Length: 278
Ligand SMILES: NC(=O)c1ccc[n+]([C@@H]2O[C@H](COP(=O)([O-])OP(=O)(O)OC[C@H]3O[C@@H](n4cnc5c(N)ncnc54)[C@H](O)[C@@H]3O)[C@@H](O)[C@H]2O)c1
Image (cartoon, rainbow, N blue to C red; front, side):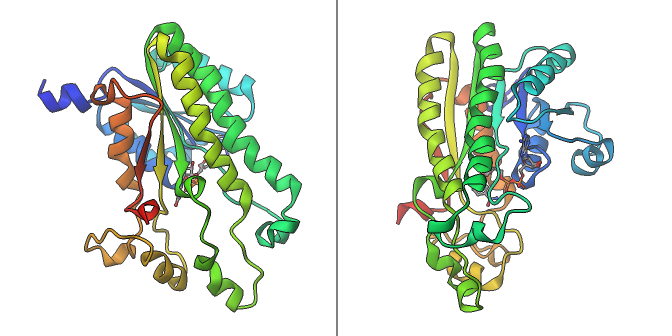
């Protein structure tokens, strides 16, 4: 085995990735499996068709049905993962809601009238969901005496959304503001993670956050133009308008799951093209 494989490889690791059908989760799932991990993807309503469409037929990726807001479903998934591959050694808490599907129009209206129900839904998945995943999968790691938890945060949990990025929507007559709950939920993850790092340090379970910036997803050209100006890093990829692509986050997550980061806990690894450096 090469030095690089010893440091960064994931052979023998059983990694849980929540929200693995999504834009970033699917890239992480595929990439971590290619690095040798056994990938247990968590989704609330998986189907064989969808799994084949997203992951093909990789033998070391399997999707387990669970809702991160429902502890009993996570416990059932843990039981199934243990039967298939043994206890998890890694957790990537990636599932999150930004604006929940079917959100009322007020959701993107002024802060003063942001609906309480939307706040609850976002907090439920983005904060309670991460807490419950740590309780269920982290506890299994603590019991086994080793593990690495990676909680997925966001630039919008480090700094406020810049509402001027959405000016073009207001100019075309919408009352659009990037809502508050997502930001508050993502910033909660930093101290939840530090708590876990301290609590489970003695059990050799590490916990860190990754902070991601926006991923290119064919956004409105006026948004892309404004966003590009906020990213110092120029990579010669005009097709991405200075945004990230989902695969840009694989290296940071793989590093935090691998022996290369073995002495790192309670920290944040920020991968944002310099967005929060300004
Ligand atoms: N996309 C971006 O630009 C961006 C930027 C910064 C941070 N992030 C963070 O990266 C992570 C992934 O984002 P994404 O854009 O890939 O999201 P996405 O919306 O594409 O995917 C989210 C996935 O989570 C799943 N999910 C939702 N609720 C769930 C629940 N209750 N239980 C289990 N699974 C559930 C969904 O089914 C979906 O597959 C999130 O934590 C997000 O906050 C994304």
